[in-house]
Image (cartoon, rainbow, N blue to C red; front, top):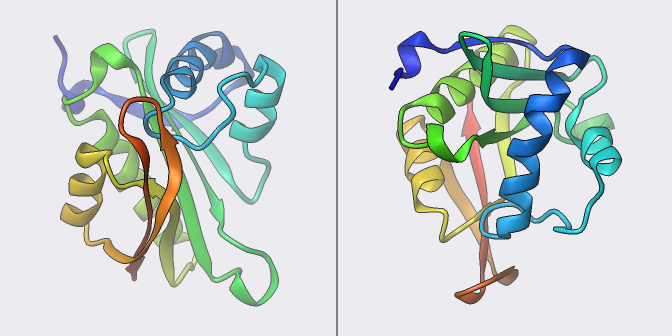
Length: 167
């Protein structure tokens, strides 16, 4: 099993979609970590996930296999455009090996390099302990939690964290 040091992160290419879609589909269907409609079509997923410039979508690859993906960009337009945001998904069999951390570190570098003042995550499911711990380790703080804002399939309604890291 390869580790995150063997993972290359590069810009998403259209030819990556056949490997990215199953990752997104699996994560969304599980309904445990993303507030996306589990019935979303492949076309809807692609339109949501593939960012247009100045945003960026990337993939984490091991050899020829996509094991994770991230999207990053401006959190809000206009007066809020100095704050970035990002989202991350990792293939089930690649979780726990540093792929998500590598993607998040990449997004943080990208945002700093593009002059953003910080990064905000708008909806981190509070029961997604691995993600919350990773984000805290990378300097994010929980600004607030919306109680019961996420309908978890086994735990019922749980909170969504708003997390932020200033640069």
